[in-house]
Amino acid sequence: MDSAPLAETTVLVTGASSGIGAATARKLAHDGADVALVARREDRLSELADEITDDHGVDAHVVPADVSDSAQVAAAIESTVETLGSLDGVVVNAGVGRGSDVETLSDEQYRTMIDVNVDGAFYTARKSLPHLRDGAGSLVFVGSFAGQYPRPFNPVYAATKWWLRGFAQSLAGQVGDDDIGVTVVNPSEVRSEFGSEDGTPFNERFEPGEVTEPEEVADAIAFAMRQDPPTAINSIDVFRRDKFGHF
Image (cartoon, rainbow, N blue to C red; front, side, top):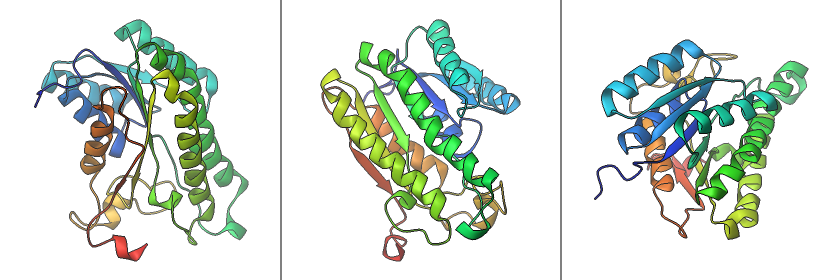
């Protein structure tokens, strides 16, 4: 097997400052890709970029941006192409989950989930497509089991992930003739900082070994990204063997 299957490619990762995003950036760099790191927390991105450059000898471009702002997304993608020379893959990972039941969900909590999970995914895909078309690239969306099964304890978050899955699969049909691969990766609970906005994050709620680790999701994302045209992976579900029966 090629030890650097993504050499001479550039991949942009949103939500790269922690959790699945940071693990994915490390994995893609291990596979030889130059990476553009997009998130709001510039200090964390800079630390990760230094680590990736030292460990893997690839270029890591730090791009502070809020994916809910279309102008910032456009600037981040253009900066990536200008700095790293191309855009061959994009991982749409940024997402938030806030609140719980519908009756007590505030306007701010509702709007934040729509702005990041829905609008951010759309803005990132829209601006990326022309560059991915140029190089027969890949677009990977990080979905969730919440986008496939009812989530009574957080219906609005679940709805954003159902939207994401529908958008991604419909987009795959639209751009497949352009040689763009589109994949949705659907993990169950992941031991990351997810949930920290309104409560205890998953990396504190669960002990190691209880749920999926970010690195395991990153492996699935990298697998999808490594597919050569015309092959594409439509979707990948990532879950522990003892968890599936609970959904």
